[in-house]
Image 1: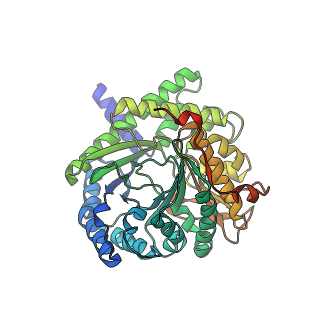
Image 2: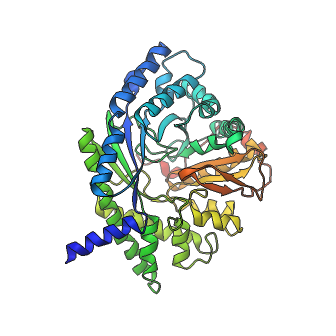
Image 3: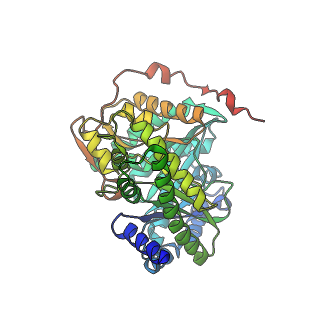
Length: 452
């Protein structure tokens, strides 16, 4: 009887509450593709990705059909390209991005992450060349995602990188202006980036990872919302237990699917990232979970507290269910990808300032937020600096994925399609911070970073 109850509950999660495996992401080490000859280097990269990644999509599709649970995206992450292309004398890495794009198309994945640079303490020549190539690279590719890590709790914040990224985001927005500046939706700026993140746009294959590895990202905001709905009178301790138990069940589903895909591909299973990653679909919203807890509209008073409870309970439930929980794991709050967030932002209940406060307790940061196209690069850099400071001081991952939509202002909306959804253009504080950003240099790591 108990077995049948569990089976029926899982079926309900899949069919009615939108439980899915958001992504299986194959990480591939490209360090051995480095070559001083740029053409030879790119050929090695293409050959390795297409060889190791050729079975990812068919195997994932077969496993999804066998278990009756949808795997929404199949993705590949690679070693940060600045580390590989840096062996060449190329001044521009756009051709490397095109090679990645061609390989991604060949193996049939949805996205490929790793057009990335890690610069919390400073730049190599390869880092700067990659960063300067990002706008053109994202404008001329379809599948490639890019990330730059500008800070960490151990090393501080590279404010020169922060300043540059404001300009890079503006240029990327302009070059993709005919598609509501969608290039910026494939670019994320991190503090404390993790090496085993299966989610885009920030995924890359860390240098401490094995030759190949399969990471899995599970999502289930609709399942958690349904569970919370059933306990309208629960106190907070009881509510946390409900969410923990629900996260446990979601994680077990992901563990089964992920380990099966990894086994059939003949690669190690890496981590299971239990992140409540929403979609634009009705009922698949983190914002709606907060409202189900008792917040009239997401962004109202107590939203940060509600999100803190949700994020912590999700992590605890996941850790109980798997010894391989990693990545980011918790709750994402991307505005354009969450119908509840979209509604709250459209009515003015959710502001950029409130979102910043909520990032202190969520899994990542300011994610998929459309802002006026005329927003200065220095202001974008200032927002990045604020998020990096939150991550550095609190020893957590924070990120910024802002989209200054060229030609659009408050009252307008930007549409990106698919899982990326659409977003109302949100107000940005107009105060000038250019004098602060122009100081440059390094913001030192906090005192608690010294732990030896």
